[in-house]
Amino acid sequence: MNLRGLSPAPVTAFKKNGDVDFDANVRIAKWLASFEDVTSLVILGHAGEGTFLTEGERLDLIRAYADAVDIPIIAGITGEGTKVAAEEARKCKDAGATGALVYPNHGWLRFGFQKGAPQDRYKAIWEASGLQEILFQYPDATKASYDLDTQLAIAAQPGVVATKNGVRNMKRWYVEIPQLKAAQPDLQVLSCHDEWLLPTMFDVDGLLVGYGNIAPELLIDLIKAGKAQDYPTARAIFERLLPVTRAVYHRGSHMEGTVALKLGLVKRGVLDHATIREPLKNLGAAAEAEIFAAFDAAGIGRVENLLAAE
Image (cartoon, rainbow, N blue to C red; front, side, top):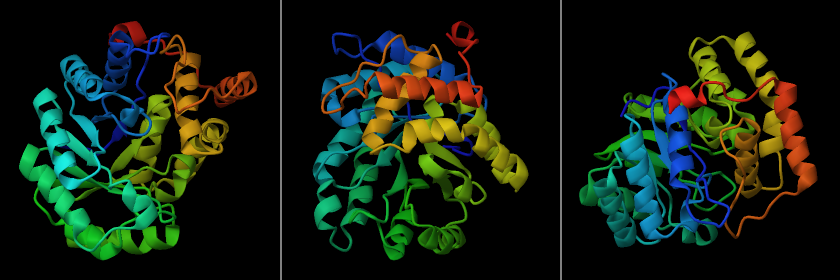
């Protein structure tokens, strides 16, 4: 997969009764894929409420996306346990996925991981499914953040084509990213630091972000400025986005950010409503007004080419 551009992580649209709204999800997929520099769509992750869907819903959503667009569909693989994750990946491949964003066992967030276990997880997923894999580096604040040796070992394994790095510790970023690049020159480096992208923009091949849902146009320009090492332009885009960044991502948690993303899509006219699933909670009228005002402040208006994309 060529991921050298923007890989949005779309939300999952629901009907007001809570069912998956496949028509609305296809609308999101076609709109995002209409941008030349959108290189893949990453579904069933945190922004997509992937762990809140049934297995049948997840596989049907992959099928809907794969039928709707001609770019790679990357599925979040979240199953707890190596065998479970491998079987999940095989089913995702059969449904039409091209890639796998491999989440760590969520038990590792609390308890940490044993040496060699992450490598085995990636190996089993690749051997069971053949899905091209993205190494997912969790924040340094968690116990599921891989040390450099573990990252290097995973990156060297067959099937691993990219890393989505969200370490959120720039001391580690500035040391570990150059070493990953030196060891694996073909490994594509993708940042997922939605809440403060600017410091990472000059070292990456692209972005894999939920932010890509709501402002793909500006994020594509930000990627181009970063690759050109054009700091003034990148800084200007970052400053323009800052009201939206604050309203969506400078919240209590990334869980709230998922709800805010849906409100942003409502503001842009891509969604009619921001229905979510438990355990997510609505943010309330004041937050909705704040988010809508942030889009106005950034000059990000309604999508004009939505029908054309469909």
